Amino acid sequence: MLGNLGDSLKSTLKKIAGSIFIDEKLIDEIVREIQRALLQADVNVKLVFELSKNIKKRALDEKAPKNLDQREYIINVVYEELVKFLGENRKEIKIEKKKPFKIMLLGLFGSGKTTTSAKLAKYYSKRGYKVGILGLDVWRAAALKQLKQLGEKININVYGNEKEKNPIKIYKEFEKEYKDYDLLIIDTAGRDALNDELIKEIDSINKMVNPDEVLLVISADIGQAAQSQAQKFHETCKVTGFIGMGEKIDDLEEFNPKGFVGRMLGMGDLEALLEKAKEAINEEDAKDMGKKMLKGDFNFLDLYDQLQMMNKMGPLDKIFDMIPGLGGVKLPKEALQVQGDKLKAWKYLFQSMTKEELEDPEILTGDRINRIAKGAGRNASDIRELLKQYRMSKKMMKTMGSGNPEKLMKKFKGKMPMKF
Image 1: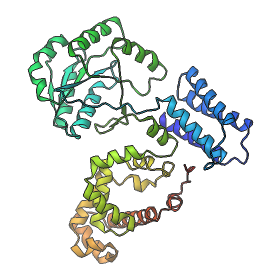
Image 2: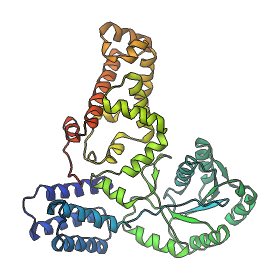
Image 3: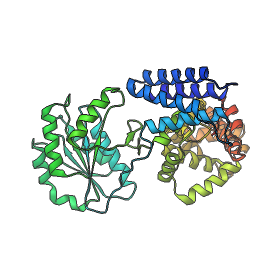
Image 4: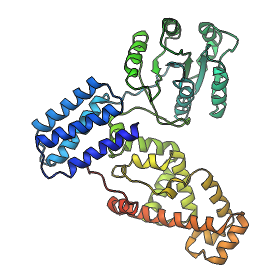
């Protein structure tokens, strides 16, 4: 849904950028397209018309500052109004120096509370906090079992009692353990619908736990029903937020309206990119690799290190969405596949190469390729594919280092989005 919305909005911006004249007719057309895109994404009708009214008024009434032409300024108006529409400022959760700081999760059945508990636990443990998880979902079968399995994967302690059906008693049972943690994440039960029984249970847990933050977990496909659901939960206990970017445990980030809208419109999100880079790469390695990459001067070992770092940061298409000017790039299929199993296969190829071959891949010719393939138990075509990736990466990084992203876009058969 977000992908379709982003494509529609980017198409609208391109229309503004390509227009010769900016008049009321064009503004009306642009506003209708924005309305259509948002309504197709199941955004509340009243909110859509309020947003479009603000965009139209500013686009017609305001004049561009000297450093922007009117087209660029209107695009900026669309960006600013979308950011305001989504809350404008980042709402950061700051873990206070008290033991433990408590985050409680709420939501209906199937919303993803248990997975989100593990996501949050990993997110904060990677930032140096000692994290524990408490399972208070006494309704869903195997809820605690799932939570413990996730906890084992990320090396986080999980507390709970499958035999006890009273969440308040479970909370009290492990109370002595909580002081050992900087952060305690509490997973609560859901229901098929937000009924009086669930509200009563949440209210009693909330009063006992006295959480520092309450996060409401809502499925991304819920549409306009999110408003009433969020309002009802909020009336019981105040809620704040994060955003999940996928189903894996690492797919979580703080919700930042500016970055979120920037990504949707193809403008990038440098803050999120830097955050992911910090998690995947230490500063010295980043500096060293950065110099080599931008010069286009690196060998097979550098390529492997680079790909491993990128792999830790997430799928390449999502990473490119965060880079200003590259959000509209349609990456070649082979570039997107350079992750996971392919990295493992290439590792075997590297292990079968000599030091000279690793340091100068261009010397790989027929006989060498056949020898390496035989030693690694792979096909010669695998080595040729590796060489192709190496040369493509070298060209790409050299182009980025030259400060000319248009060249990079042409190589990937994409089109450069509007500059800001």
